[in-house]
Length: 311
Image 1 (cartoon, helix red, strand yellow):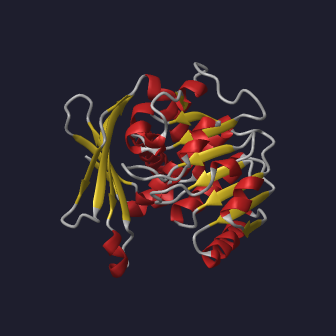
Image 2 (image 1 turned 120 degrees about the horizontal axis):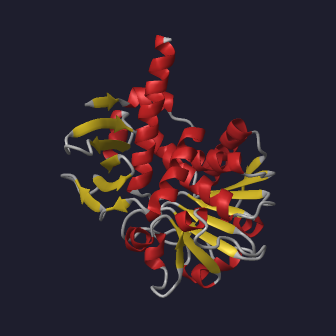
């Protein structure tokens, strides 16, 4: 059995690897298989975990994602992630890949792929709602695939938004500044939401025609970032439709609302954006195939590095 510990994977992962693995996973949604998500908690109900499993190509396995908020007191990250791969022939453990840091790249890559596929090519203003660790990864990944001229940051605390904008300028070189949620949404060509919210972050009327919205915060029942009225104006896309309706943002969408999986757009089986005035919404609930392709890519890169060292 192979083991890639966190100290190793954090050195292997980058945006290019994560985006390539994401594209592979989304393209495989028509052939791969995912199984129902398990949501549980530890001895304290605030300590939560999810199990996401599936089969894609040569890979079968499960991702365990954990959120232990009390870890802050001990200086330990609250979020943990590990992918367990099984041997397809025997069902025995083939590999364990720790992906706490890599998971942030993986999540950001889904939003970047959606922006690359669904946003207007002439999008110039990128708005992010949220000022946490994942939001920073998302902005960096999305900025790489677009031609943005400026970034607007909206957060609950103005001082956090200002500090976040400073960090964006350092990481991307793009002009960035803090703004209210209304001002940031009204000016945006692309809106990214990356929070743990359980209620809408903005008003549907603030999103202008032609904008694209990528939401990644909802990954459990009750979580919500988008206003339901936005679904009346937008064309809806997601990673996996059934999962998005169960634990993702689209749990709040009308059951009759048409939803297209991004993988179908990438494979040419469904249209994406069809007009410059169309509002597109993408919900990333996070799916197992992306975790499996990421783990496989990390193992392959580890092998490549080992070969290069040997040579």
